[in-house]
Image (tube, rainbow, N blue to C red):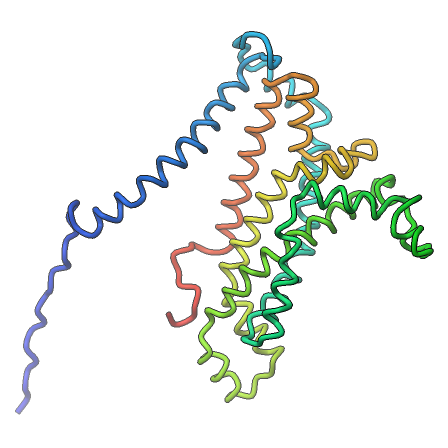
Length: 307
């Protein structure tokens, strides 16, 4: 005799009303939304409006239509500033990402001496960019710097006087300062990977290197996207270190877009074109962030396999 199973009972999903938990969560986002609007959206709209005016920082603001945009977009210095910005951004990413991942994996182990090393290693993150730039400028001086003091010819170079070396110095200092920050991100992400995955791989005979490439790196996929987005945005707004270290030189070898915006607005007193450059910076940052998000996936998938 065949026994038929009883029909499945359809259970209606609980609806979330405005006064329930969902409503409470929405109200919790209101302060953050107000702060973002006051300090993010309103200034951005002000800069956008200022890009359609003429203002010399002192006199009245005069509407000028698209004059500022025409001036900026036809300026031959704009492509060069964009190229320098992307060059520093790309080289910094290539240096920072692999080193940060490896250091994050190393520091993720729960061992006391690694925690002590992590504290020492994060010290550059606590220093100001201006102080770091002044220190490196003194250390790399060809006459009184560390190369001449130690008598090592390899270090006694005109680091900030040669175009190629100056870009390399900027990339090195940016990487030296911000690798600890990204290492901290990767350290937390590595510790969130379930140990069961590594235990299962050990049973299958996987070694450390195989575990790194088959488990750790795939699980860090979204963390890499987040870290890369922060690097890209940080490179677009990189100003104080370059201004103190090289002031855009030698020539215009390190004149990035943020420095070009400062010079246009506060040295040439052309706030309209400077605001147009600021809008271009925002648009480039938004475009690159969206590109990285698409490359990293939809973002609504779980980072941990099986979760």
